[in-house]
Length: 281
Length: 259
Image (cartoon, rainbow over all chains, first blue to last red):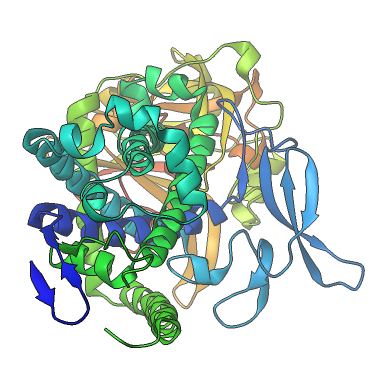
């Protein structure tokens, strides 16, 4: 705690994130980035999603296709549940790494590698999948044993009772101040719990279901998702749900005091926002 | 801190976009290096070991019912080999075609299509998973590879079966590069590993590998060589083709192909 003379302002430091959680967090940042981008590279090898065990090429749920336009130019066409949209420049057709316009599901800037190179994308994806799983297991073991899940993430009954107010506060970008900001608020707790115990496990299991060798040993696994192609679709949906979570997470980091948040995830130390001031940073 | 928050936000955005561009360029440089893909490859051995431990060597791939068969089974890769030798065989409905089983065996075999069809057969309705991501279900009938290998009596030093195909994939200075694949003997002896001559109750059509193709149901489509001509048992495949055990493996795809 320190005291700044003349500004009537206490700086109340708390040690918010332990070393292991900070290391896991940043390894996770690298893994999730590489997995998403190499995943889009793999998806681009056949940019369409189906439901069931097999691919009904005539009726994909989603497809990012290319068609020859009237002028002979390539037109990107995205179809979702039978509804088609022109998405040239972003989905279906966009500039490759050399600037050449080409048929590709997701654009070059979103894939690893940038060019269409399925074999290399798979190598990135499967390597970082292992790091992601090992890192996640380490985090989970620590979080369970240390009580981080129980104390830091499971919301209390009164938290849940006041969830309406918390949603309203978030919508107005009013964040907890003072002592209230010491732990995670109820929306954070629920979001993290859903990611850790629902989204990520689903994503991993759906990913495993795409392996023909795994399917031979655990036929109930793809069946759980409604078939291998459904599992591929769910893997894709989970990945984009995680992307949506990450975007909201980043926006919240930005609007609730970016340097304070970043510092706390690097050094562990977090300054409690003052109760009498709207924005500490 | 007294800096204008807007300035800081702009700085942060610039750092973020710079980092993103640097990240992309860095990843592409890593992909094109010699050392980094080798690091990434370590994961393949881990995946193979873990999957084999979890699943076991004898586990069977799921078999489906007639109702599940794909109406439109997509042929991939070569769909009509232009090689003169193959075209000549096809013209004669493969009457002159012979499958050779050679290499580290005591008794090399030469089998006609009629001889293969006279052997005990296995029929299986299975899902074909392409490395690109799609799946189709088809019905395959053929001769299990294991008993054929037994007839040829593998020598104890034999570890892999290499499958040579009729279709040329590309032309290089050394001549034509033909499709080939390889399996370890455990996979070759798996009960669902068959040399298929029928697909969906009809003779195997040319786009799907006539007259004979390999089916290994627990691996990706590119393992299942089409237009088979010769099977050779070897101690290792390092001197064959590009040395990675298959045409697509030589292009950087995994030999394991179980994911």
